[in-house]
Image 1 (cartoon, rainbow, N blue to C red):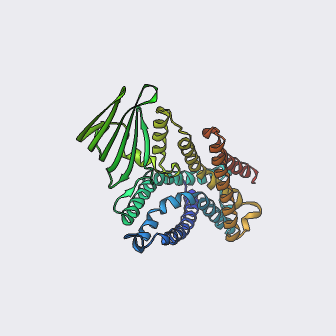
Image 2 (cartoon, rainbow, N blue to C red):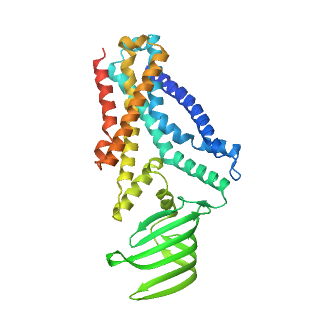
Length: 355
């Protein structure tokens, strides 16, 4: 990479960073204002609301990333075009393909950063924010509302109504099925701790087993239940698919398919999230053609407005496709990529039309 390549990348990435910083400040402010309705319940005060807002910033950044990338890329390219530096680069021997390769390289760096935040940072901080808020409002908090979390593991159906710590659960119900989906036993435990090697340690366990016309009851102070359902999966069961990491979505899809359950919402969220990430390099490339032609002398306001408009159009097309896929039970693998492919095709066509 030559000095000109580095200069172009530094200018574009710097403009994107500046736009994202502004968006994050606004996002933190909006989140904090939105939390004012919850302040005053239990020990949830202004300081906790501020911490909750800050912990949710990575998710806001991911949602605002496409628009921020488009606006920042257009501002960076526009600054180079207005100062005639882009024209000088072309005159110095940088071809259109080389400029495009540098822009795509910037997009790939942003793609890797976005995937890292989506995979490791945003889900963990969101979970921590929800736990802190729930523990501040109530001593014990419901894992998933009044109904709790319901998951199926082979011939077991497990319901957990409460959660009192990171790995401590309570109010567990276990329904065991036999051939023909007939109920074989019902069990209840006052507490449940996720053990090792696919086991649960259940406290104050009481079971009623149905055999013919008789019911046999038994109780144990401590009972070990073999189940592949972990506490992490129970957390996934009550989190919206759009808030989960790609690896968690993949595991959830495989788990649900293996148990004969509907995995389409998780498959759709997986492919949509992946497609939105792949759209980032196309978004950076899309800004390059606007550095030439009639738009090269446009001001930053016009470029910001255009970038925001294109970002909103992409966002609404993406959400429309996701909603249509869910409503009409269409193939998520195909349709989730439609907005990204359209953005990529538009970027390539505009670039080929430049001189």
